[in-house]
Image (cartoon, rainbow, N blue to C red):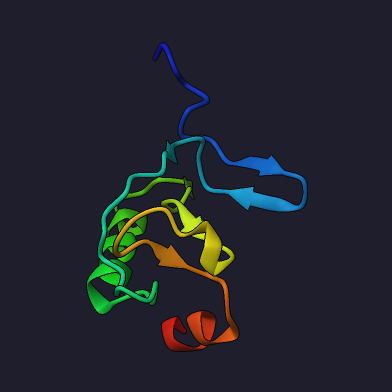
Amino acid sequence: MKYRDLFQPFHIGSVRLKNRLVMSPMTMNYATRDGVATEKLICYYVERAKGGVGLIIVEGTFFTPEGKGYMNQLGLSSSGHAEEAG
């Protein structure tokens, strides 16, 4: 097999990944207008994880209200964002 290490476990510091497959960030626009993760967005990432990728890099996320770049962008600018998603 040409890429025999692709499906082997890998460490990034103390974090162990089950393989070396990485999902790059893709804008889904599944969050609410206020940036809260919806059930649809959560299900989207759950399905990707079930698909077998070792690392998922989530979509663009704003960390301050001023940093919001587009409608339905995922947010993490208040404790409410984490609590509602969680």
